[in-house]
Amino acid sequence: MPQVNDTQENLQKCICGQCPSYNQCMGDKTEGLYCARGKSSCEFEKNGCVCGACPLTSEYGLEQLYYCEIGRDE
Ligand code: SF4
Ligand code: SF4
Image (tube, rainbow, N blue to C red):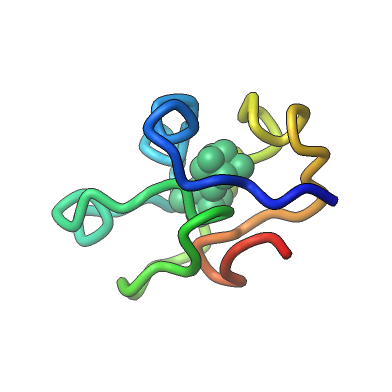
């Protein structure tokens, strides 16, 4: 499985900001693109994950969810 690259282009495609689990701490740290950058440094509640609807999921064939918790896809 190809690794997701940490690029500006991919960051713009990331929809973590629209996710119900994405919280203020994550926003304050301008986190996102967890599937490439690794897990969040924030504490958060799992209220759902929208990675399945992200264009990068089909582009890279991602098979998991909650990359903010499990870290980068590798
Ligand atoms: S798959 Fe999830 S973590 Fe990765 S860019 Fe898309 S929304 Fe963000
Ligand atoms: S990785 Fe999934 S659960 Fe975490 S913020 Fe992004 S879309 Fe939400």
